[in-house]
Length: 61
Image 1: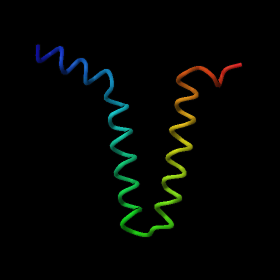
Image 2: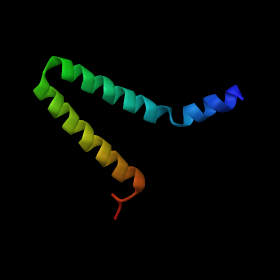
Image 3: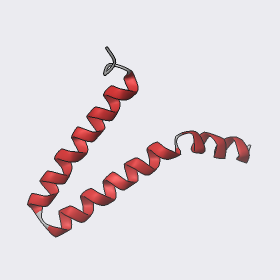
Image 4: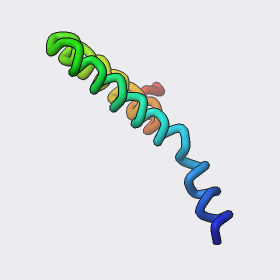
């Protein structure tokens, strides 16, 4: 049972790490400067949007 749990987590490990890295980067820039936070959020949204397009296959012609 525990091994199944770890296998399930391992299958989405890269997604979890990406989300945690984005949260960490955005919180860091928030506490530094509000303008940097806005830029960081914009870059994050662009990267997530691009990644979702590539994953869904809509980027292929």
